[in-house]
Amino acid sequence: MMNGTPPLIEAIGLAKHFGGIFAVDHLDFEVHAGELVGLIGPNGSGKTTTINLLTGHLRIDGGGVRVRGQPVAGLPASGFAGLGVGRTFQITQLFSRMSVLENMLVPGLARPHAHKTHVTREARRHLEFLGLAALESLAAKNLSGGQQKLLELGRALMLNPALLFLDEPFAGVNPYLRDEIIRFVQTLHEEGRTFVIVDHDLDAIQRLVHRLVVMSRGKKIADGPLASVRENQDVIKAYSGT
Amino acid sequence: MLDYILIQAANGLVIGVMFALIATGLTIIFSILKIVNFAHGEIYMMGGYFGYYVITLLGVPPFPAVLVAMAITFLFSIGLERGLLTPLYSPRIERKADYGILITFGLSVFLRNIAIILFGPFPLRPPSFIEGSLAVFGGLMISYDRLVAAGGGLLLLVALIWFLNRTVWGQALNAVSQSRESASIVGINSERMYMLAFGVGGALAGGAGALIAPIYSLSPSMGLVPDTQAFVIVILGGLGSVSGTIIAALLLGISQNLFIALLPDPSRGPSYANAFGLFIMMLVLLFRPTGIFGRHAVAMD
Picture 1: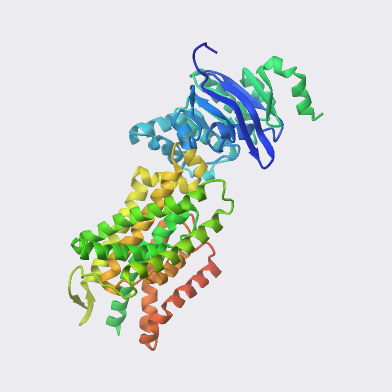
Picture 2: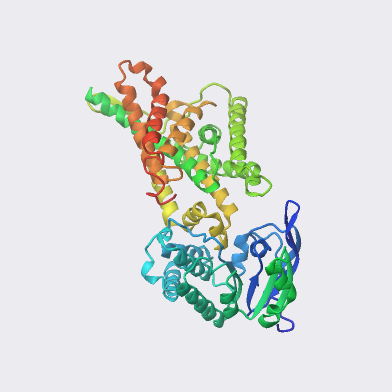
């Protein structure tokens, strides 16, 4: 975006193979501060693998990742959290036997110099925002699927991340909650957070994002403003399977 | 007869506390690293010898020697974890549970034999914490060393529960035990938690070894029986549950000693004690396959 400011996160020739198959095939991809990017592609196109590589959950086989211009090769997932890169999972991963509030407190208390009263106040503010305040003492495993997704988002917010990767936030949620999640993301984006959203729900994605990146078979086949990507023949071909 | 049963129950409580120290260590390691540490009994044995040599070679008094032995066992365990278990965390090893079994089983044989070479095959006994015995229950005696072992062990268990529930480290361990992925995305370095869990588990076993040394003496094979018992206890307590493990350990310690006491020929009792524990385990697993306390009723699952 702005000249001179390095991208918030950048993949350079990023590669990952499982056996002989490249799940991510020398991908170049960058996200600047303030963007709201949609990352789409057919099943198996390497979207989740890309997120896993960009958040330290998988070891990189080739290429590199930079956060704010700094190379972060070999950084464990916990290190990315420290750099302000948060994420959610396709299948929610909560501390299932902890309460809703405790789930929110773990990332807060894991921060250096954390103060419990302050962290608790912050957690309750986020729970209020996400409409989970009334459920704070319930065990996370007793929440509905949609509520678990919200809690996972809330837990990621406790890291005060500059960049958030959301992996299929709309999968398996009812239309009402889907609208809620769109609204939450919009509000958080207006507050200055950067988002990369992976999902198959193209309608929701189109309502949210300004820029669309399309992957197919581990490669990036389109990247640009919504309208131009929609008319891209490669994208239509990848989706129709021809 | 009642006095005799009471004193056996008291002895059982002492043994139960020792079992609890060993088994909680095992269960913490299991819940964080997801491996069964077959060398845990040998770490208990090493703790006993560390305590012995800290007293006899360095002249440290018996009470602080327990803490020194625990500190050495903590570092020794972290060394073992760094040296042998780090491949578990890399994607290079696919069958992690199998690797864990083989490496810790090999380690247990290695440590037992190295102990014969280094410390000799003959039993060694460190000086008592406090000489003498307390007369209880109409003339029957219970040695001060047993009281010290039980008291010291209970203190360690209370400290452990405080550590797990009230400190940031404890909460981080709890988080890793529930979901490694979640813990890592919220900024908890899982590898550091594996080190901490293995170190704390080892230190607890080491503490038990140092506390029990004046009562039963030290020998390189002393870890074998408590190790089997600890597995029984961990399963009874519901794999991965600390409070369940402590309660199961106390129950097993007491019921085992009462079983020995009530056997028609008490001199044969100790030989059957191990079988009794395993028999209880089989019964529990038949009727409650998740252990007495299941996996839900605990702080540190």
